[in-house]
Length: 525
Image (tube, rainbow, N blue to C red; front, side):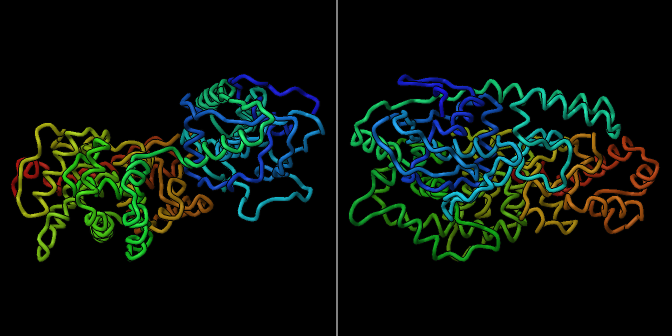
């Protein structure tokens, strides 16, 4: 505790390694009045993606004082934090606990977790380890197969360790030099991004406990960043109307399809905006508040409509909510259902075509206001039985482009993977593991389409064995034929991957043809 912190009384921009060192040395303490660490895995991964992309992740606010001693946690993410010495100026974290704990846990070296007994919160478990998968070129949670190309994040703060990692793999001789060079180039790019990451730290330097307390409550009363829903809920609240409470009570009443969860407050609000005749993407806040006050009875309807849309999707469109291509499709479907007469069932076959074609065409890749409104108008007409031409301002194509990389962040890939999982019996695997349900079979061949399988990573040897044995049912459900088997047996990986990718594209092209894009665009039945 003898080192001087990297900031004093003025805002400073600190590099990531130094910030983590300040936490480990006890210069930054987390007071016990902070809420528990609650971030889920995907949110932690998104924070790291932002760091890599150079996107600012916000500042940290600390209270610097030498007079007050606050009860603080003895450990962060399982790592024991030293106690400050008497009389030393301490920096207590007022804002940024979730982000700081995410970073501190992610970049810890193996064995950093304390062996000594430390006082921790029962609800504040150490987050699962995050790795960088060079094959997927992305951050992932866990490395169950101990893949050499799935690197712990602490390596990306140590250039020497990165180079040593690849030298050892090169000496092992089980990966071609060109592949090692390719993956090392990716790793060094991540290394550069992490080492040059800068995080603002804003100190509140005062011994005034009351001022520090007011500051903490002011910052943390906002919780997560203010969204449109938070604003609208606050501005419409009175003794007889609580928008958040209405949504919560309505969701509690719903029986959703297996595996589905209630929609977010913002998505539920978006449906309400549609019911009020407003722009789903962008609406004037004052006008939205006024219309809700004019028609408060409509606030109970969005949840029921979203639940109905979820049941339609689960029965006809996707096998797991993970595979919904665009949440906007679900939102617009819910709004369009509101316009149907009570005795009229929606045309589910037409809806299947609408979802499929808007996915292939990337209709909601950017939620431009006028495009969303045009798509909603078209959907409303179609569900009620009126066939209208596809709007001219919306893109369409009568041919199916080749599949993108099977990355679940891509809408079209999600839809294809859902059908693939249904055909091979992997729906449960996909639902439980998400992106980790998709593995690369051939090491060193990257994440190209023909190298991606829905298969448990810990049983990859079983997949190799099944291909060699020529299991016809398995081969067919995983887009393989005799050409693939022959190439596999001869270790002709290039032919294997090309043929399998061809089969996957032929499968999707056949599905696309059945959607009848030309008739759909022209508005014919």
